[in-house]
Image 1 (cartoon, rainbow, N blue to C red):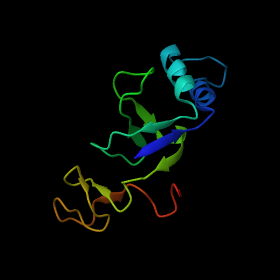
Image 2: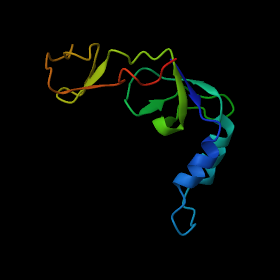
Image 3: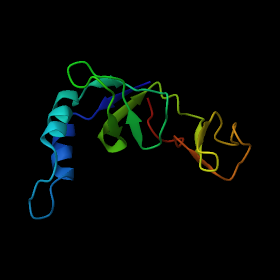
Length: 121
């Protein structure tokens, strides 16, 4: 599973971290990271899955460890393995089904990772 970062990720980060009066409260290091990964396709660490964010594997020349990328910075998800899976809020585990939790059997605590219309490839 991979994600493609939006080409304007750095500009988005700056805008997200600037208040209405024009005061910047972001982090220069993150600004540099966003500049380096803008437009790139990055490998996702699928050990732990989330609905609105992605943990990456280490990125050569950027980070020796994975970093967390929020969904709004992602242009496209490639080979999304989250389809048909869900997070169970009851047992706090990933279910292999978005209809019934494959861990605890509950049906009323599931939050599907991907809605049918999201991230068309």
